[in-house]
Image 1 (cartoon, rainbow, N blue to C red):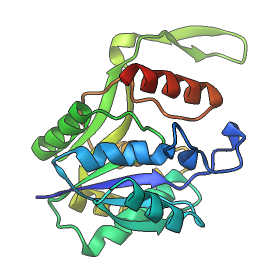
Image 2: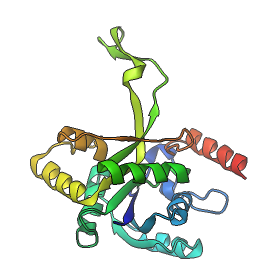
Image 3: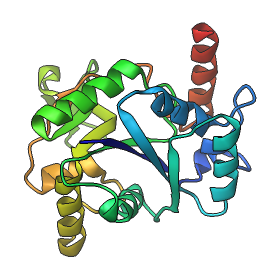
Length: 234
């Protein structure tokens, strides 16, 4: 059983209002996505890395991989119009490269501060249960809209978990799920992801450890938080 990382770097990030895709923004002389790839490069359980990358940036990513010694970066392929399509592209690409019981770790390329302990736990939980999703407690109050201005219902916080990436799945189950989902149009909307699709297909998911530092870089504010966290880390 080996572990392969499937990193999503296929979006452009319009909300960032930059001239380059946000995953390639330069942070302290290093592209954002390289911080992400370094975490997987360092982890002893990750054997190879596949990046699903925005068109026109494949060669740049390959060059950055050489520059920053990302030796596990094995493959770079094109993404789709949504995250789900990009993950599906990655899964289909791995069909002849992974065994049924290999582990595929899916992660957003714009979550650059994934910690080793988080990766270790999601892989270990997947070995035990067949899948694992990074999770954290939900500490805010959630109310259900009655209309745009009122509510009379809330969801108790102890029933909620925040989930993000990394997520890990046995390849055989992941391959089956994406074939079924896209052939039957189940869990394939623009807002769907591997975890929500699995639940839509009737699968049970297992929680793994998360971290508040594992932020997703979506806006300029997120970028400022990342820079502050990197300064603290140094």
